[in-house]
Amino acid sequence: MSAATGPTAKGRQRRTALLDAAEHVLTGAGGSELTLRAVAEEAGVRLGHLQYYFPTRAALLSALLDRILASSLERVTALTVAPAHGSGREALLDAILSDHDDPRLVRLFTEVWALAAHDEEAASAVRAFYGQYVTHVAAFVRDQAPGLSAAEAQHRAEVFVMLMEGAALFRSGVTGRRTAATDARLREAALTLLGGTVHPA
Image (cartoon, rainbow, N blue to C red; front, side):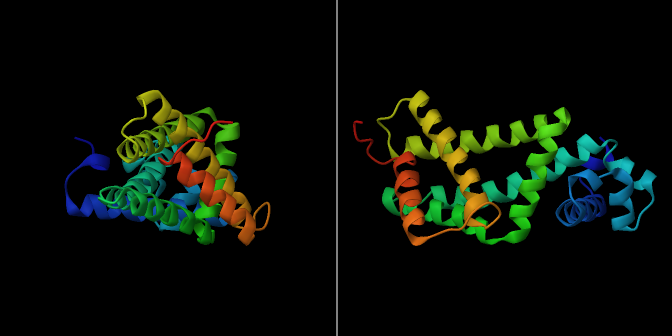
């Protein structure tokens, strides 16, 4: 078993500290500066120490995304067990929209998307991240609307994730500005995707 996946508390603490440093470099300096050497310097360790846990830049980025996903899914999972369908949808949407108020998190994902546009290894990690995100949302949608087919739930989940990620750029102020009117329309569309009634066009 490698040190990166070992069960020791010390190994987990060191790995967490290295991922904290990687996140700081990514959100502070940008994806172009996310090198193993830069992360090692940020963490105050030798390059070889970092490579013991993350041999390549791709491995480091993948682990960073995995951590973000695990944290997000842990929170979302707690919301999806709500017995009342309507409150469950509202709570899930509120939690996701609240991420748009976190400048650090928005910067992190903006940099990750930029990396994925130019780096196939990064793109692969990002696709895996969103694949899991969509799968989780699709399961939530089917719980909210049991009559939906698996394919329809999957399609709704994909559009929901697209909508939320695009909304993050506008609502955070990166590419636009939020208004009460657009937020109302966004909520209406998002809640429908999460299991509301689809009205014929």
